[in-house]
Length: 294
Image (cartoon, helix red, strand yellow):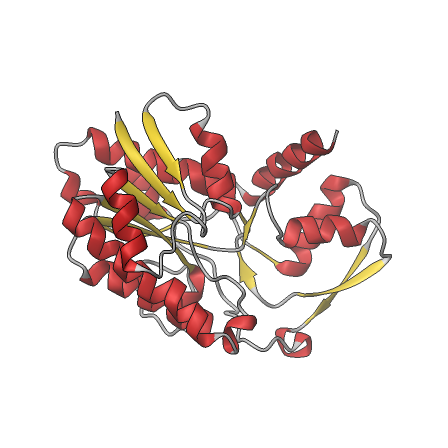
């Protein structure tokens, strides 16, 4: 039985992978939290890899506090960049395939079409720059890797935009939400499923090398944060009006990309992954949240 090591398992994606693993008889999983594995410490990484002979590493660990990263620059750089590099080097030494989760923030361009994996990267802000540096260190390590860049992640687990809207929509009559950032909300459960389909495809292939590289993944379609909120309220049957404001008016400390719509053809064609539209994915997540609270 092949072994999969998961870092950052207390996050949204880590929890979705944990739920997925309960149904799996195909792989043995080890889910690690920050207490069990300090990914910023090479000795801690050595200990885990020595005790658990992983065939695949799914690196979900990330510093995701986008605005806070502007002041906590060292923490963001250590987790998003340096630690990713340490993990990649250990994967090379142990012949372990690294599945690294990255972000749409690394692009930060508006080419007038969906972003593809070969587009230039112009990250703005500490979070985005450290995520790109992590991608580069994974690639430069010289091992087997698949980098999955995703966007606007939410889940029934943890804190995220969907759960915040459900909470605020239940008590507020109106909310002001950014309407000029365009992208695709992505359900972490769908990301977990995509990662596992990728691993299954790699595992069953006689030509594993063809799966190395960078892939975009998100739910299908596009929207903006304000319209995303409206759809959440509509599906959850909450009466809350949404007023659109600009990114400039919102005034966040860290710059956000105005265009995050990604071309998903590479991941679909290479791995045969079906893309779920963002509205349908939201419905699945809301059903999951409802079932957890009843």
